[in-house]
Amino acid sequence: MLDDRLRTAPVPEDEAIFQEIERIAACPIPPSLQAFWRIVGGINFVWDYNCDVPLPGFGTDIPLDEMDPLCIDPPAAVTHVFETWEDQKNVPDPDLIDPFHVDLAPDHLHKANISGGPPYGVELPFLGADPILDSERHGLPFMDYLRMSFRWAGFPGLQYWRDKDSAMRLAAQLGAGLEPF
Image (tube, rainbow, N blue to C red):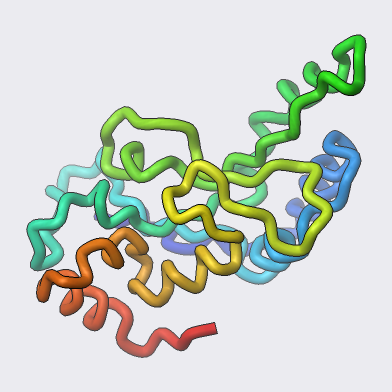
């Protein structure tokens, strides 16, 4: 079954997480990501492989890893990297500090319960408004990735299967009533 938390609503404790991210990374959270976290929180269309119900076919033979279900972790999911970030800040030469990576979602293979690559995320510092969602195959800024994901009913990988009738039917069925933004 889909995770019973399709959406993780924002909570007051998120404010402390925002402050800690900004303190460690020494920069503000990009406005597009902060707005998403403040308004939406997190979203997760990834199948729960620990449940006893088999993965549905969705009316198509497209593998789930190719469909790439939408997932953006809520702020609380980021806290596991704070200790690593702190260690990184303590290198002798500040010019050697790598950007801080904010992991936002598993990659398309992990979402399909297949060992895969690095998680989708953004790097800080990013001094613009809308950072690139790295490690994701489209190479889009965060908001454009969300727009594309909703255009494909939460399965952005379906765009690569647009010539397949079952992909278009699935996107139309699941996306009925979704408004572009």
